[in-house]
Length: 234
Ligand code: ADP
Ligand code: ADP
Image 1 (tube, rainbow, N blue to C red):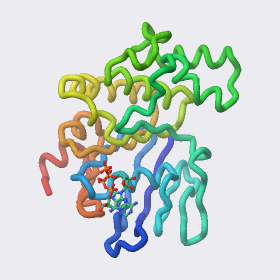
Image 2 (image 1 turned 45 degrees about the vertical axis):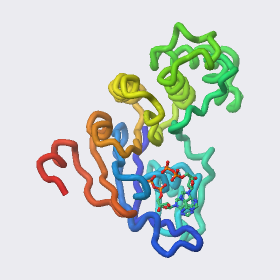
Image 3 (image 1 turned 90 degrees about the vertical axis):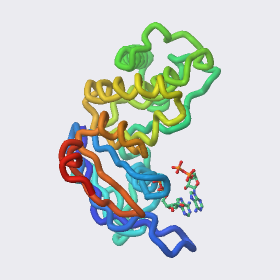
C-alpha cells in the first residue's frame, strides 16, 4: 500500500474567484483509511479527483510513495493510469449487461494479464467482496449494494496500492448502506490498500475512517481520529 502526501493543494476553476480547495494538506500513511468529511460543495471531490489525476490542481503538490504526481509550479502531471490507483464512485460504474466475471476481469484484460492470471485474480477479488456465488450472473440481476461490491472488486482486482472512494454508498437505501458500510472497512483492510474515502455522512466517516479530515469551504479544518474529534469538536 502507498503513502499519499497532499501538500498545500489549490484548485481555482476558471472564472470562479473563490478557490474550490485552498491549501489543503493531508498525509495518509500506508494502509490507512482517511475519511474526508464535509457538506456538499466544500471541495472533497475536487481533492479526490486531483489525487486521481482527473483534475489538474492549480497549486501545491501531491506525491504517492515519494514520487511527485502533481506539481503545477514545475509542470509535473502524471497521467491517471500511471498512478496505480483504484476508484469507486457514487453511481455504479459497472456494465449492467455483462456478467460479474466480465466486469471484474475488464481492467485485467486492459492490462494484458494472461487468462490464468485473470481467472485467479477475479476469483480472489470476488471472494474478498463476498460475491463468489454470483460470478456468472449478469450485473443487472443484482441489488444496488451488490453492484457496488462488483465495482469494488473490479477496482481491487489489479491490486492498486491506493483506493479512492467518492460517496460509494449514497445511492443505496438506508438498510443496504449500513450493511455495506460495515463490510467496506473490513474489505479495504483485508485488501491492505491505502484509502481516501469521501463522504458527507458523519456516521460513515466514523465507521470507515482510521482518521477523519473535516472540510469546510475548500479548507481542511481538522484532521484527527474519530475519538480525537469527538473529544475536541470544531
Ligand atoms: P457532487 O455530487 O460531488 O457534489 P456535483 O453534483 O456538485 O457533485 O457536480 C457534478 C459535476 O458538476 C462535477 O463534474 C463537477 O465538477 C461539476 N460542477 C460542480 N459545480 C460546478 C460549477 N459551479 N460549475 C461547473 N461545473 C460544476
Ligand atoms: P464536494 O465534493 O465537497 O461536494 P466539490 O469538490 O465537488 O465539493 O466542489 C467544490 C467547489 O468547487 C464547489 O463550490 C463547486 O461548485 C465548485 N466546482 C466543482 N467543479 C467545478 C467546475 N468544473 N467548475 C467550476 N466550479 C466547480
